[in-house]
Structure formats: C-alpha cells, structure tokens
Amino acid sequence: MSSAFALYRLPHADRYVRLEGKTQEFSSCALLNGRSGFVIAPFQVTSGQPVVLIEPERVEEVVLSSQSSPSSPSSPSSQSGGSYHIDFSNFHAQLCQGTFRKIVLARCADEMQASPVEPEELFLRACSLYPRMFIALVYTPQSGMWLTATPEILLDGEGERWRTIALAGTMKLEGSQLQGEGETVTWSTKNIEEQRIVATYIAECLEHFTDDFTEEGPRTVRAANLVHLRSDFTFTLPANDHLGDLLLALHPTPAVCGLPKREAFDFIVHNEHTPRRYYSGFMGPLNMESSGEADSSLIPHPSSLKSTHLYVSLRCMNIDGNRYHLYAGGGLLKDSVEEQEWQETEAKLETMRRLLDRITG
Image (tube, rainbow, N blue to C red; front, side):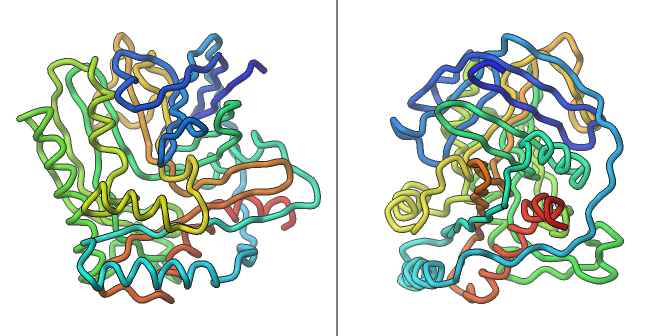
C-alpha cells in the first residue's frame, strides 16, 4: 500500500470503499475549505496531531460478504478505575462549582493479544456486527492506525442539502430490549438535559451559516447494544466551499467536549489522564465522488455530485501491533454519579472489545 489508506463503510451499505493516497497536514479545520479527500482529525489539533487529508490516488468499491456475529462475552478491562476516580472527582467538582454546564470525561483501556490480528479483519468484523454504524479503518503516518464504529454524524450531504445530528444520552439495552430498537426505554432527566444542551449548541452554530434549517426529534436510536437520544438537523448551504469553517464551528460539539465549549475544551486537554489523540475527533470522506452510498431517504446522493460523510470518532481503537488502545467517554452533569458514568464507559468499550473477542473466543 501507499503511505496512507482508508477503508470505510456507510451505515446500512452492502459495500465498502478502499482508498490509498498521499497525505496533507493542516493546522486547522478551516483549512479544509475547498479540499477533497478522506479526513482524519484529532480532538485537539497540534503540530504532532494535525488534521490529515488523504488525497486519493486509487479508489475501489468492495462488496461485503455475509459474516456471522460473535456471541462471546466481552473481556474484562485492563485498566483500573484509579485514574478515572481522580478525573471524575476533579471534573465533577467543576460542575458543582458552576464552572461548566456539562463536561465530557474520557478514558483509555489497553487490550493485549498474544499475536496481532490483521486490521482489515477487524474492520470486516465491525462491518458485520454493526450495520447501523459508520465503520472506518484509517492509517496515516501522522495519526497511526485507527478503527472506529460510530453512530454520530458530524456533517453529511452534498450540493445545497446537508444534515448533522445532536447525539447524547446513553442507556444499555438488556434482556428482551435487545430484540428491538430501544422503544421501551425510559430516559432520565439527566440524559434528556444532556441531549438538549448538545442540540441547542448545534442550532446556534447553524444560525451563523444558514437561515434555512429544521430540527426533528429527539428520538431513541440504537447503536450496538446501546441507545442514544438523537435530534436531526437538515439545512441548506448556498455554497459548499466553506465546509472547513463550518467544521471549525461544530467541532468539538458538546457531545464530546462540554459547555462553555472553549473553557471545557481547555480543561479536558489539561486534566484528563490520557490524551484523546484522534478519539472524539472526526473522520470520513470530504467532497468525494459518491460511492458506497447507504440509505438516502433523508438526503438524496446523485452520483453526479461530490458528497461528504464526516462522523465523530467514537467507539474507536488505536491499533499498535498487538496492543489495542480502546477509548470511551461520557457526558457529566452536576447530578452525575461516578459508578453510573464508569459503567457507561464500560458499555461503550464493549463495541470494540467484541471485535477482539473473536481473536480469543
């Protein structure tokens, strides 16, 4: 392969796209204005963690074959709760003092395997297990190797028609609930408030770019064995040559950061035990020829237009030989309880752990 590559599959698609090419680095999302390629962006852009654009030199579509899903239970965490306890106490104190309305706390758990598995095999397992999610495997010299299975759209569309979502609140499906889409769950006040904070922020961002947008929701949506609250925003843009400016305004959303945004972002960067790197950043094709398209019921994707499908990099792992760095986080409010928040991150880590279970299961 060339110096960088990406494999990605859109939700509900029966094929994936493989691309290879050279990379360009950018110090800001705004510099993506007018660019085309596959993007991987970090939570915090630095000289060592730039926004990276793969400019495709080779692109192909591959039809997915049917695969069976694993049924083995998830493996135990390799990380103790010690550092999480310290971080939670620190973050929660700021909420109690009124410094933040919301702040997101993330953590990293390492999983080791006796011998490494081919990253593309993990990608294919994710495609089989998680048909509702955006699946991507990306390698660049700047970022390393990342695999994500994420439900959260950051920016999607083409031409004048676009959409984004507000996704927040998390509940784990259990027992008979696993047979449905989460229709029977009852949301707590904390989850409802957290989702409303994210939706309000996105609406305020969009007002700076368009006066033509609509919001629908919130509604319950399933992602693996979890459900979230989701509001959908559809909007028009008179021109799409300033997508970088819109991305700069949207990213990071309160779903992965907090409010007030700048203050929460700075606190996270300086106080979380484990740097997030490209976790809770975003990735996906930007202004690329339509291919591998999924359900177009909300926004049509004529093949004559270039389309964008950027997703927040949640439920992801950094692959480093036979060591797998798994990332997860959760939004904290003033009434958050540490044990409940820890269990939420454990549930989110299961998304990637289930892929590794097939190595040893």
